[in-house]
Length: 251
Image 1 (spheres, one colour):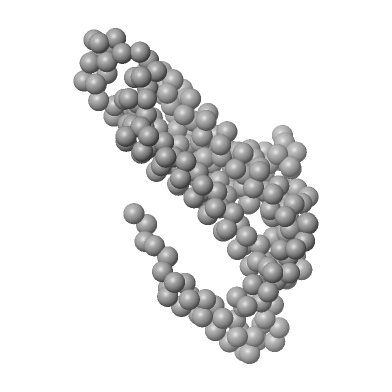
Image 2 (cartoon, rainbow, N blue to C red; image 1 turned 120 degrees about the horizontal axis):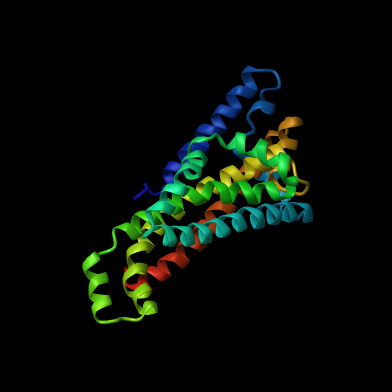
């Protein structure tokens, strides 16, 4: 289990950040441009919140990145279910899965720009990064299914639907939850990186790039905070749904 965020620890790092910003501003001419303080970032975030452009950018990025995540999860579940009892399909999927795991995200982003419109880039890249961990973890869960339970279900001719919910789902859901938690972080990082490179209009990635070009470090930190909030919110919501399924299935 990952360590919890403690208020005292967060406060300590914010104070260190504030101290570093003040020291840099005092030591270097124009040092405030290099490292905005948390107070400046928070003030800038409050200025952005009432803007319709802010909500449009946050909404566009959220829809594309979360959409890519959900599509990839569905595809990974389907292919893992099909591949579990078919070694030839596992062998067929092994090279592309290994390639996606090994090749840098930037390479895929640049290559995808040749084929796709920049507006579709974050959706595609998010889906691509999510697939390997979800597929491999679900496949591992299916491989570990109790053979004796499956034989018992076959002997008593238990219907497929009850077999899925009574045997496979409790076995696979913990693996799926663990993979989803990892993949959610990957998809947001990769999705925003794709936006920074592709620069689709009205997205968080475009705002980050603009802040970097004009040395608007308060904007840079403010939009980074927005990404953290969006990613954490979507992760909590999705994992809460998965946990509900786990309890329902008795996993």
